[in-house]
Amino acid sequence: KHLANIAHPSLHESVGGKMPLGLRRRGLRVLVTGGAGFVGSHLVDRLMERGDSVIVVDNFFTGRKGNVAHHLGNPRFEVIRHDVVEPILLEVDQIYHLACPASPVHYKRHKTNVVGTLNMLGLAKRIGARFLLTSTSEVYGDPLQHPQVETYWGNVNPIGVRSCYDEGKRTAETLTMDYHRGANLEVRIARIFNTYGPRMCIDDGRVVSNFVAQALRKEPLTVYGDGKQTRSFQYVSDLVEGLMKLMEGEHIGPFNLGNPGEFTMLELAKVVQDTIDSSASIEYRPNTADDPHKRKPDITRAKELLGWEPKVPLHEGLPLMVTDFRKRIFGDQEESTT
Ligand code: NAD
Ligand code: UDP
Ligand code: UDP
Image (cartoon, rainbow, N blue to C red; front, side, top):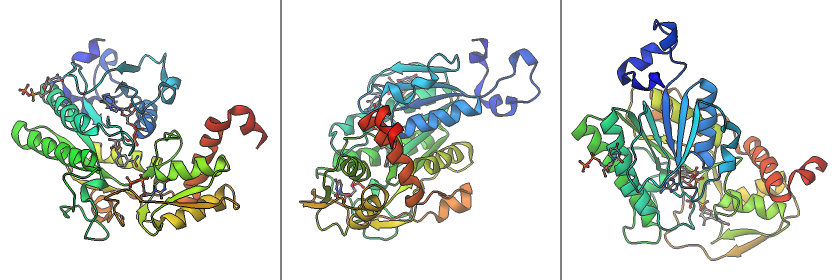
């Protein structure tokens, strides 16, 4: 408990450094908002492994306690049920701000993105913590530049059905830079491209989780539109690595964090068929409005300044996710027999 009073700037030096044994810290105090979610829980695993003390703030809107249950009981871990739209008082060294229902079917995201981000920035300012925002490739909208470079300002419909997400994140980026310029806050911005992996929400409507769940349940894979639109899919461990490098590094960003391997939805369906069930059929459905036609990150900046690039290609990452989905959809019994 006494460690909680150590001032922030000395912390980096003090890790394993020359502090008296009684005061030596094993790690930083890190807040992860949205830490019970898909990406957040994998990040929490890595921070705990590193020896940090981790506080998760989550309202369990799309996240699950089960994602972090294995840390409960560890004195370095704490989870608080809280909506970031309400203010909160905490003392930490770093804030990873992930809270935001990321799935396309939750359409009250603007409030979390705007008010929630403002609160977390206010918190970071009060305690002098470093703040990392997880923004999204959606800030590029339906991009007129391909692949997308961080300097591209995007092509976003401000009043469309997706606006609460993409405009919400654009506002969050603006607020983050305002606090950096106006209050001297140390900030980092990541623009995350489509990410998949174990612990993803099964029924939140994203394409990889839909296809995998459908193939496992012997249902047709639902391809929206003509299936020729493209996305680039990143495995979650690569993303977590990038987020931590960004937080620890010297550069504000924004940084694209994504896997440049680009697939049409029909190509993705083929990879899912090859991985799970070659007899899975395809069913075409009308596409959603304002659906971006293509998306692929240019990751030159992250490569050069963070020394980061993704390592796990789709055909290697997908089976890891399938194992997890199989377990969650059919239970452990089925898993042990397959
Ligand atoms: P997720 O839905 O699994 O995780 C989000 C977490 O935030 C959940 O645990 C949810 O309960 C929590 N949350 C939502 N609203 C909250 C609120 N008001 N207060 C407190 N907690 C709240 O989604 P994810 O895929 O893990 O996404 C994490 C972050 O990464 C999000 O900010 C998302 O926008 C960003 N991102 C993700 C992807 C992707 O492909 N997964 C792509 C781009 C950006
Ligand atoms: N805030 C918070 N925790 C804190 C400090 C601030 O939740 O430890 C919230 C605060 O309630 C406000 C927001 O963050 O709604 C922005 O705070 P800031 O101090 O930057 O703005 P102000 O309150 O001066 O408008
Ligand atoms: N999509 C699809 N079938 C589905 C779900 C989504 O073909 O069951 C398409 C969707 O129209 C979009 C792409 O897959 O073109 C990616 O959608 P997702 O919601 O996963 O991510 P985002 O649109 O946010 O990139």
